[in-house]
Length: 113
Figure (tube, rainbow, N blue to C red):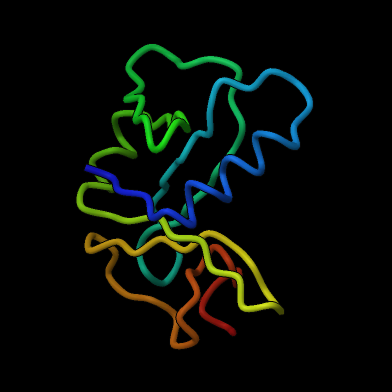
């Protein structure tokens, strides 16, 4: 099962508050690629699609399609803000590796940090 840290849930709540329009939840998608073997994307959704897993994380609905869900088994989404950079971080035991700077390939466009 996909887990979210408290800081990730709070960051998602902030995003949802700032949308202004009705948004049902946040979609998390995984595709094969990058130096870890996986790339992560997130987006706002107005409704769940057929076959989606809907995870209630502290009042935030996280939507994951069946294929992405298999890649996210045992993964954790965190949110880091060091005062210079802020963003979601995927800690995934299914990934083959991480960039040496600790960022995901999706954040750096590959493993060039």
